[in-house]
Each structure stands twice: as C-alpha cells, then as structure tokens.
Amino acid sequence: MASRGAFNSRIGFILAAAGSAVGLGNIWKFPFEVGEGGGAIFLVMYLAFCFILCFPVMVTEIAIGRKTQKNPVGAFNALGFSKWNFVGKMGILCGVLILSFYNVVAGWAFGYFLEMVSGNFGIGANFGGYINDIGRVGLYGALFMFATAWIVSKGISGGIERAAKFLMPTLVGMILLLVAYALTLPNAMNGISFYLVPDFSEVNLGVVGSALGQAFFSLSLGMGALITYGSYVSKQDNIVQSAAFITLADVGIAFIAGLMMFPFVFSQGLEPQGGPGLIFVTLPGIFETFGGSMGIIIGSAFFLLLSFAALTSTVSLLEVPVAYVVDELKIERKHAVWVVALVIFLIGVPSMIANGDSQFFTSFITYIGAAAPTDFMTFVGDVANDTLLPLGGFLIVMFAAYVWKKENLNEEMEIGFPNKNSLVLKYIDFAVSYLCPVVLGCLFILTVLNKYFGISLFG
Ligand code: PHE
Image 1 (cartoon, rainbow, N blue to C red):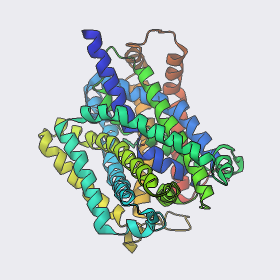
Image 2 (image 1 turned 60 degrees about the vertical axis):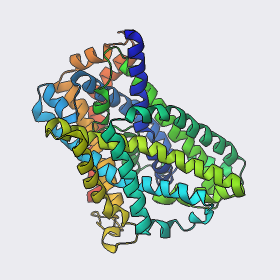
Image 3 (image 1 turned 45 degrees about the vertical axis):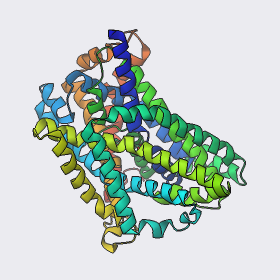
Image 4 (image 1 turned 120 degrees about the horizontal axis):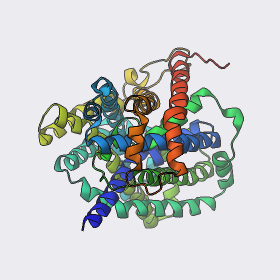
C-alpha cells in the first residue's frame, strides 16, 4: 500500500500548491498589470520570467521544505545556518503584507458574487462607489478572513484541496467558454492584438520590474509558501515534475484570463489601463449581455468560483505566519491562528480605505521623482510583491547554491527523479548557480533605484 499512499500525498501536494498559486493573481491582478504594462510586451516578459527564472526557484523552495520539513524560518535553522533565517523572517513579513490587501480584494470578489445573485449588473459602473462603502467592504473582508482562519485552524485544508480538484477545472472551463464568447464581440481583435502583438518600444524598467514581481506573486514564490508546503511532500515524489506542473497550470490560467479580458475591455470601449478595478468594472456589463437569468447564473458562478480560488490562496498565505508562530514561538495552533488573522485583518484596514475614503491613505506616499502619489494598497503591493518577493527568490537561490551547497540541492532534487542525466536537472543546476543570482540580483538593484528613487541607470 506504500505506493498508493505516496500517490495520494503527491496529488495532495500538487493540489495545495496549485491552489496557492492560482487565485486573484491570475484573474484579477494579471490582466490589469498587462493593461498597465503596455500589453503583449508585459506578457512576453512575464512568460520568460516564469519559465526561465521562477521555475528553478520553485524547485529550490520545495527541495528546502522537503529536506527540512519545517516552516521558512525553522528550515534555515534545521540546515544549520540560522544566520540565514532572516530570509524566512522576511518571507513571513511578506505573507502578512500580501494577505492584508489580498483579503480586501477577495472581499470585493465575494461581494460581487452577492451583487450578481441579485442581478445588479450596474455595479461595474459604480465600482468606485462600491469599494468606498466601508461598512460593506469591511464586512466582506472580515467574513473572508474568518473563513480563511477557520480553515487553517481546523487543519481541514485537505477538504478544500479536494473541492479545488473540481472547482478549479470548472473555473477554467468557464473562462474558456467566456474566451469563445469574447472573440465574437465587436472590437475583440483590437483586444487580442493589444494582448498578443508586442510593441517593443513600450519596454522600460518599470514594466520589467512589475512583470518580475507578477511572476513571483502569481507562482506564490519568494516568501517560503512553497518551503512550508514542500515540508509535507513525501520522499518518493518527483518535485521537479510537480513544480513543472504547478508552473504550467498557473501560467496557463493567467494566459487564458488575459485572452478573455482584453476582448471584453475593448468591446466595451474601456481602457486597458484601468488598474485594480479592471475586472470589476468590465465583467458585470459583459454578464448583463447574456440577458436576465442567464446573466445572473454566469455572473454569480464566475465570482463565486473566483472567491473560491482566492480562498485556497489566502489559506496558504495565512499558513506561513501561523506555522512560524506555532513552531518557533510554541503557541498553540488554535490560538495562534485567530490572533495572527486578526492582526493581518487590522493591517488591511488602511488598504480598504485607500481608494478614496481616506485622503491620507489614498495619497499615502510619493516616490522620489514620481509625478503622482501612490495609495497605501498599491504601496504595500509594491514593497511586498515587486520588491521583497524577487529579493527573497534571489536570497533563496544564493543560499541553496553557495551556503547549503548545490550538491545538497541536487541530491534532494534527484530523489524521485528517474533520469539523473536529464537536461532539466542540468538546467536547474545552472539557473540556481548562475543565471538566477545574476539576473535577479541585477534586476533587484535596477528596479529599486528606478521605482523608489527615480534613478535610471540606462537613460
Ligand atoms: N499566487 C497567489 C495568486 O496568484 C497569491 C500568493 C502569493 C499566494 C504569495 C501565496 C503566496 O493569487
């Protein structure tokens, strides 16, 4: 029965990790980042970063997790390099920051499900007013955090993953049908060419930095989420193959979400640079075109499935700080969960009111050399997703290649991998030792100087 047990755990891990990766990052964030990043050129960079740089980082995180069976801080300690556990601590901070705003957006998605149920398609045009209705948005955010904490406290994420096995393919199927519909709409082709025909004159450091941040965010990398999940992986598993599957699934879903969104945006005469409201402004009007009850069914199913996809991601985001508090501070899980969730919810409150409600949080900070101020929610995203995640990825590969040593990483990777001379293993070895450290290190310095200090080293 041993092999059957291993099979079960493998599927369990893949579903959990894919559930963490696939979420608002694919369907909410990816399209608006493409829209703001000049269209196809952003897509090209995102794809390149995911496959060339992030895939090897993912294998490394899972390998460290499986080797040590620990949370991201404990993992560095367990390997005997406690000086490096600051990388894990930074990851935990990142998880806290990301969840603080992610939960707010998840609350919007859930609220939209309720609006669709009641047939309120006008909500799209009223998105700005909707998110400033702090009573409602606060309530949905609180509900979402409560659901996340409840799942993490019961340790019943297994059930969630099994549900995800049916719900995620349903969401994918639905998006594909919507893509087919989108292509029949007037102006659809303008959307497709915006999305798929690159204009290389649009490239600048800002776009490179956001594409890199989006690749890390979308794959749940750079903060130890996959160290934590990797700690549950069995010693017989082929982690390289699992990582490849997770990467393909996540990138594939983001890609089709873009194929759906841009024809919709152009057919409605909207601007692709709509920012974080893009899907929320665009989709209700589309669902309305299906007419009456059909629109209600499709619209509410879509936002319910999106909320569910978000939930499997919020669970993984909360799991990271909770695992740390439980293991390292020796606090009981059932208490730790609620305290950590409450703290993160409170950190999210400024993000809830950063879209007009509070002038202070709406114009929170002006980066040096920037024309306009940045709101609190975007600021937290800039720091956590676009800065700390790639930095975390850089430090994790540096650690694996030069501190823990790549022989140890290779040994862990080769467990469960049938062909030791495979080109994939050779590529990962090369990427972790040279390519990722150099490229991630340089891009980190260039994008930080550019984004926060307005200094561009290249013209
Ligand atoms: N990858 C998730 C998404 O795309 C977000 C996430 C980031 C989850 C980092 C865990 C860790 O929605």
